[in-house]
Amino acid sequence: MVDKPSKVFSLSHPISPRIPLWPGDPPVAFEDVASRDKDGYFLRRFSMGEHSATHMNAPNSFYAGGMGIDGYRPEDLVRPAVVIDVHGKTQSNPDYEICPLDIEAWERQHGLIEPGSVVLMYTGWQHLWNDPIAFFGQDAQGSHFPGIGEAAIRFLLEQRQIAGVGIDTHGVDPGQSTAFATNHAVLAGNGIVLECLTHLDRLPAKGATLVIGVLGLEGGSGSPASVMAFIP
Image (cartoon, rainbow, N blue to C red; front, top):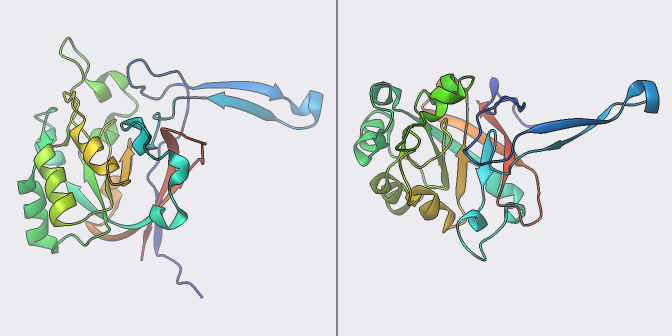
């Protein structure tokens, strides 16, 4: 018999037409197609971008010929997770780039990050979700939100052999990035990239297990994701 976890948290935001959307992405839309009064049952259709709401990116979103979201195996999507809390550094600097020093500080307190882990970055941006203007910080220079710097992702992939990363902003790369180095580096190895997570402040620094549910969209560049965290 499998031991029941002591706590289970959803790390996904509810999906509605009011969610923050990456500039240029299609809106979230719902349409009734059957009603209980007329048809005896209620049914809607919905449409949205593959990278909207809490979602997972696929390699083919950045690499021609890369794997689609339907290429991930079930066992790829169950992973140990660690949470690195950087929200104290991001509140005064929305352009903050998470660096190796942040990782080293975490490891001094909690030990080395184990290979195969998904590293989740808590920036505090999850609390801005219901304010799309603040969530993106858009101005003439583009978006302003924190993300994982190139040196940090290289360290995590090369020195710690992680399985992927996640964050509570709309991008694992900083909002000012145009190179998307973190996405490129993780997805080059068919790793996991999770964006727009929430409730990261409720998780322990280590010990949680992620179960990532995605839609098996044929050739999909990504998918809205139902991400659950199990705490033993």
